[in-house]
Length: 488
Image 1 (cartoon, rainbow, N blue to C red):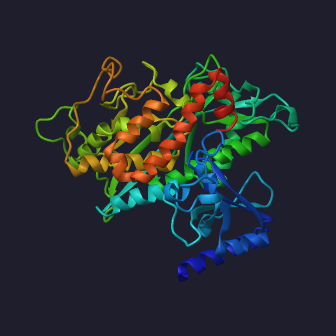
Image 2 (cartoon, helix red, strand yellow):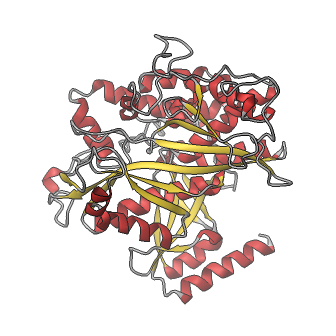
Image 3 (cartoon, rainbow, N blue to C red):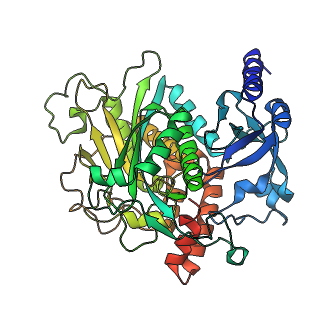
């Protein structure tokens, strides 16, 4: 253990004692972007800062219903998933510098962890590890990634005992029923101050929770749909942005539930009158040595028009954009990973239907924002849903973009009519369901090279388990109510 690690542990121990914490949650982000972990007493937490916390390995093999997608007690599992046979333990290694005091839970701390095998080897299926490896590929080129988060979600008021203070054991199921709710605003009145005022109580909880955790929240807005809102965060380093997204979703759900509200990051809640929620990922690359935006160019390339990527983006930026386009179908699974999320891709719905880019065009899959000389020049990916695992979403951008940079790929011209340009089938069409997205992910060379064939196979199996259960469900809406609305 290094001296800096010892210092970080000492600071964490001092904080645990100084804040009078009684419990500390050792949290880890699972395959689906949800927090899991163990809660330790302060005495045990201080020990665990150095020794780590044991965790059953099957937690990494769950689909969205919490069913284990692999048979860990059958022959051959040690060859397919070495280190996971017989539900063996993994070790959660905490980052002591991540210790926070939770504002909604009495005398409770929270610390971020990553899993390793018992011999200390990092687990290759850990999604945070995957983003770290992707960013290391960028760093080898002297580049870093900056991301801004623009996240839509829904807040409802709880109105049933099932998810209130009296949980009825007769309703228990796997997964359990979704909650009965009412709206916090009626919707269909975009950016309405009146709707914001009606929703101010839960939005204040969101604001205070995010700020108490040190998250760089910029704004809270009323979106178009009933009970739909949006949170916008300042741009940060990609790994920090991903960490913030994971913590924000979990914190908001917990803090709001205690106040009698239900927050969901499910793309399309299970109601007839609903607007889909998206997660628009703003991204740019920076030169590590200078901090300069590597997507920005000082002046438009000679002879170009606004429809040419090189009118706005640097040469590096155009190649990165072209890589995102080339591998859009392959990375869709990482951006929209639930069966529910594909209902968002509708015409004229400010969500993409086809693979293309536009200059400041919110109907295009990729929206290029900025101009020559603008240090805020960036690419906004509008493919994602708010339930996406942020580590995989961002890592997919890196791998696709680097693939374009490697062969100096040139993008097509911008579209002005993204919904008229929808192809009936083939490489220009976004996958239409989870099964098609899995197949596209499995076939994509950049995803295979970036994530590795083992991770590609592992993730595909887990998402295929979800797709198969969705296909088998007689009541698709009830499946989504239980699988997503009550859990995500």
